[in-house]
Image (tube, rainbow, N blue to C red; front, side, top):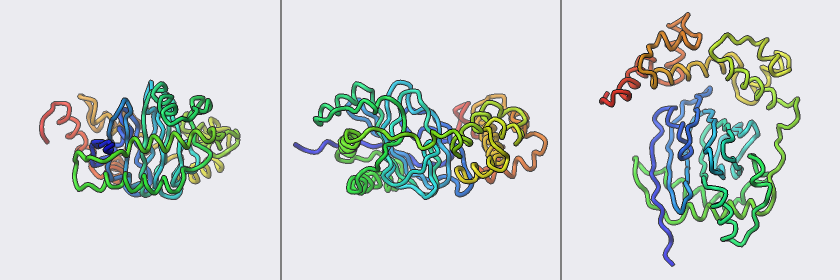
Length: 323
């Protein structure tokens, strides 16, 4: 039988906002972290009720959110920089994970990363296991998490070569590739048939990951209000020193800089999406209106453009007029 050909649609990553759709159909939050601004490309394909997503991400970025409200996503990291983390766990080449419907993922990507993922219904997943003569491990659908073992090196090499060829295209394009998605499904289904998901490395309440997770939850709830280090330490049930150490180790950031980074992202979102927004009003909404000069400098450093340039982009998009 001739090989099944899949058409992949490739798009350049031009702004941090483009990573909001790093997984097909998802609406994710992408946060520029310290270091290189993100560049690269995203690619998508669909076949037999399965959506395939891939990304080549060069830069330091935190991407988080739910991939789908009603479908399961299985993914593999084919290449990634040292110090990258998924659910605040260390990840490396070959790391595989599953995200259940409605649950959230957070990926801290450092350096150059390449991934491929498949999003499909539970019924479709069961069909894929049956198709390959394998039994679906009941733990696979119990919870989101990382598989305890990496994908076989030979599978990673093959997938890396095939997926990288999509991203090597010189421009935004439709690219026909033979069977990448179907072969990926076969590889990942076979991998998950061998062993259940391992326990989360962050289950101990005193771990650094638990500290960062608790602090980030507090920050998300109070981002539009003053946030003190004392309040963060109390929310994470730890000392100031340990709080700073945990942020430095896991996010390569300080708590204060992380809060400021998130607020700059919220200002950017308001400038792009709110019709009546101004730079001043957006800054005031997120508690950053006292020093507009510093705001402009920090904003340009983070996003590579001024707040006014983002505002102009937002208004052009809202009125569907060319820049």
